Image (cartoon, rainbow, N blue to C red; front, side, top):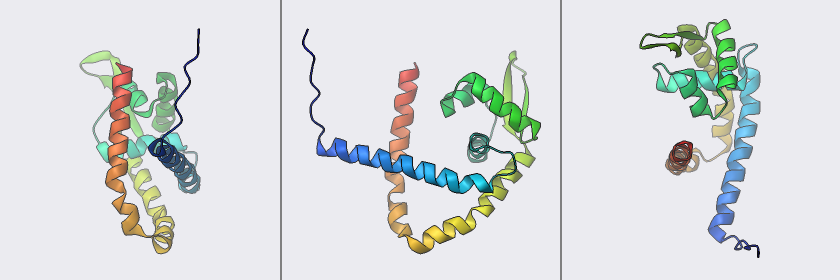
Length: 159
């Protein structure tokens, strides 16, 4: 049996690889900048859930959150239990199906999220002073389209 050789990458593929590399590095660096500003004992994973609810509102099941964050249900349950212990989220039985739980953010969770956002103002002010913000913002629609595409592709792969 002969092995099929991969074609050499095109210029677009190499540029996309560079783009994804930059996005990954930016994510790591920004997480490191945010981490010290989080409420005592809060992890980035927990902050991510608060950010999710602050942006979207409503209620979700632990399974929906696990899917959204691409983690196991067990990992999500653990993270939610820690948030619930701090009174940042409320977990209650689903009235339509007692076997399921519904998760929602509390006012204390939204306050913690907002406080962290305010603590980030100096960080973003420094970035704005040193970089071309309009150029960065011009990239936002393309990044949003990329995120939507990746999210849609993930949903297709999950079915």
